[in-house]
Every structure is written in C-alpha cells, then in structure tokens.
Image (cartoon, rainbow, N blue to C red; front, side, top):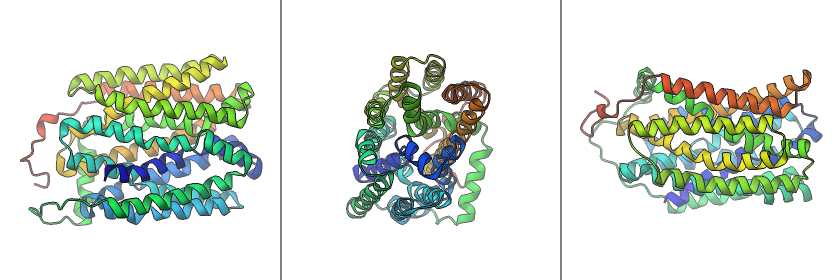
Length: 401
C-alpha cells in the first residue's frame, strides 16, 4: 500500500521539477522573463502549499485513500490543460490545478507511515519513501529532456498526465486502510481548524516552520528551475547534457533520504545534526554562486542532491513534536510551510535574477547567493527559537481535551 501511494508522490516530484527542462522552450514560446518563469514554477508550489491544511483535515477526518483519490484527478486535468495552453495565464492555471491535485501526495505517505508503522521506524521508512518518490525526478532528467528536444514541452505534460492516471488506478486498486477505532466522536471541520490554531500557538512550531520553508525549497529551486538554464547559459551545455546532470542529481537524491533516515537519532542530537547539515547545505549553494567552474557547479549540485536527504530528519522532528492524534495536521502544517516556501523562493529567486541582470551581476550568482543567505538566516532562527518538548505527548493524552 505504501508503494502504491508512492506512485502519486513520484508524479508530484516530476511535476515540480519540469521547469528545469522546459524552461528554455517556455521562455521562447511565451516570451517569458526570468521573473515570469519563476512565477510559472512557483504556481504549482503555492497551490500545493496552500491546500495542505485542508488536506490534513481531509486525512484526519476521512482517511488517506479517500483524500488522495478525490484530489489527484485535478493533477491529470491540470497537466492536460498545460499541454493545450496557448496563453501564459492558462499555463499558470494548469500549474495551479496540478498543485492542488498533488497536494496530498506526500502527506498521505507520511501519515500512513505514522499510523501503521512503529514510531522507531518512522524516519527510516519515510526516508525510503522519499527515495522511492524521487524516481519521479528521474523522469524529468534525461528522458524528459530527450522528449522535449525531439517533440515539445507539450508532449511532456501529456506523458505525465497518462502516468498520473495509472497512479490513480494503482491507489484505487491496492490501498485499503485498516479501520480506525471510533472511541471518540468525529470532529467537525470547525473543531479541526481550531486544532490547527493550537498547533500554531505552540512555541516550538515557529522554528520548525521557518527552517522547513527553506531547506526543501532550496533543492527544488535548483533542481526544478535553475539547473538547466545555469548549465546552458553559464557553460554552454545542450538541453540533453543538462538533462544528464539533472538525472545524476536525481539519482543521488534517491540515496540521501534512506541514508539519513538510517542515521537518525532522537532528541537534541537530531536537532544539532539538522543545524550542521543546513549550514553545510548553504555553503554548497554559495560555492556554486561564486565559483563558476563547471566542475564546481556540477559537483556542488550532486552534493546538494545527496545532502538534501537530511530533510527526513526534519519530518522525524515534527513526528516527535506533536501528539499522535493530530499527526495528520502537524505534517500538513509542516508540508504547507515547505511548499509555500518553495513558491516564495522561486518567486524571490526569479526577482533576484532580474535584479542581478539589471545591475550587471550574473543572474545565477544572484539567485544562488540569495538561496544561501535564506538558508543561513533560517538555520539561525531554528537554533535560537524554542525546541519541542516531546515528553509532553503520551499515548494516553487526549488532544481534544
């Protein structure tokens, strides 16, 4: 059942990284500025992030299977709309639909694992899911680059729509949730929303959300938007050559989450490791920004793909920070922060690229320096703000009292 749920997650990974391969053709066909290209890529992530609260409520009230089967057809429709679009506004609307449809894709995996696997295995199983789901990024490496180069970016969306339909069928056929005990009355939507308010009121939530908003956003902004244009414009790579680099980065990113999941340690040690990895992460982005040799850029991208696996520790940190009865909502809030952060970072980096070009600074230097600065600032905030006290949550505690 976890593998079936992973098919939707893999497709969401593919959708959020198509920009790196389609960027050149989209810019040429729709005459897009760097800022408009950033908005195109951000539209998916903004819609994805904005829907997380509602998806969390849906999962907690109606279950994993029903939530993902209801939402995912919108991704299929959005992909087809994007393939048929002749106007930039329609193209962005297609990205919004895809974002809404994919909104529960990873959330349903993490909640299913939290509910049906032992707590001690959460980080390792989540790491495997992140690794398996990253197969979707392989599609947007060399295979999609070849398809886009030989046919068009439109055919890329058609193929993704067909794959999404197959993923929906797999979930419909194989996923059957075990019955949950009805020891408590079913919450209303208003009660569920009040639980979200309680999450935001907890002092440790802010630090978790701030760092969550930039770590994954940094990787996706590079892999999903700027990787292809940087290699093509800075080093003269062809579309397929840049697709090959994207494929290698994606392959390495498959290894990171299971590796870091297996190295997980509970308590303060986990948070210290998160801080250390995040600062090294920022250093890699800075290196690509200021050292313009091809080997530094490609090597830095590969290392970022591997080191990004530490994000699984952030999910484990969330898992330990809130009571089990509101796991779905806690994961939803964290995932919302992650993907609203992606949308904001892609918009901000698009603006940084335009600003850099206007002031005689290489656009990619401005983009990557901005990402590095945001990572450092968020890491400092995470270290300074209150940490969660997981000892407060016990299986017997009633979160609704």
